[in-house]
Image (cartoon, rainbow, N blue to C red; front, side, top):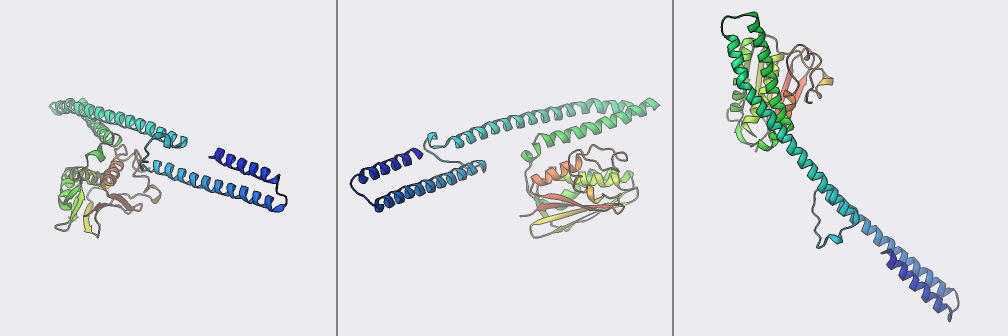
Length: 317
């Protein structure tokens, strides 16, 4: 475009020179200056509009909006480079995602295959006669089983399998809590921990039953691990305008305020938990990931020495 405006100015200048051969006075010079000024103003206005349009189109590209053109030559060099870069980035991301999925599937398969010989090992270790070696074998087998379960959960997180397999639908919150409690009740009985519940009849929310049950189980598992023997874990639920809230309160040691945002991070373990309770720090991370993927979330209120209350927010129709 700059060449067109340069040609126009050249023509105007030539006309001014030619007219100057016959006309004398300041009026001609004034007309010439006015004409050149007008040409420059029009040029800069058009360039500004073009730049704004280009910025908007590039911004639309980054926002994922499709730019419809009849011919690719209508795109500017910058737009073509942006589109090429975005296509390359999408291809790399798809390749990385596929690699994560393959690794997750492999880890899950390895974990599943190890369960059978591990169960056999534990069975033989429990057979009489009971010796010191049998106790050591049982302890190591239980630890290996725990690590395999952690590997399976971690592979689900890293492989993006959770979001893809979630099937949210309207379900009973009471049934959800019952399924989660059934998975932890035996461990709670060993520590003589009482689990109480206050769930309104007919309370429903939108969630995936299997995955959300695992999320609630992780919170209950933490509560049982950290609660002292003979204590009480209370579960309550309440309906709000757009979501259902489930609270799980325990009598554990509590969580300091500066750690309450970190406990949801992968592999994070509290300062007081690292030596006292077995774990790898993925339970709460997995819980939050499941809930967020389903349109909900989890939060915690706690103070050191005063127990903790985890709240789960589930969307409603």
